[in-house]
Image (tube, rainbow, N blue to C red; front, side, top):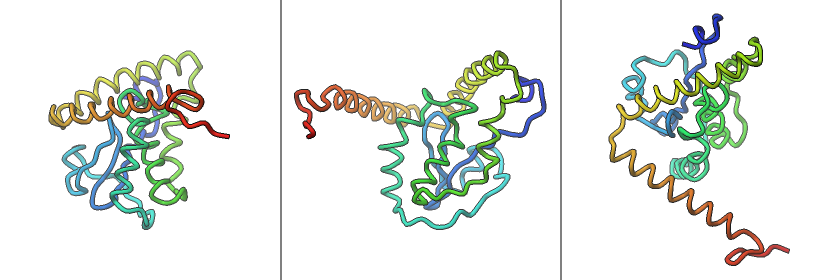
Length: 184
């Protein structure tokens, strides 16, 4: 699809996930996970490549809390951008947490998506970004809905909205306002 939009042959924008604790974690319309053996059915193909990046000292509960408390707000359907904020960027951030900031992800993974539009004139690049993001949103929502129960989606969305309300209230009650803590 990208080669047709860009009117040039280009390398793939790789799907990347993080395999840890017997699961793969990835970002599509939201942060998702499946048992490692089940990811082939989620994507309809086996991984092209896997990389052993070492071991983590972070426990599963701490990692999943980080995903929910930190990355959920940054990686959801509203923030997805085909070229600049995709599963590759999620994996980089998740790996940084797991590896204590020392991530040695193959550089071409992020470079392919971050630099995909560099050779295009600015106007064409902006139009391509807009169209690609709109198409990806439709495709990802359809794919995601087909792979998840409506009840699971509703529970996840309710948690996300509750967290957003809590964050908004905390910001509204920041330092110097009623309910806030004054810092000296």
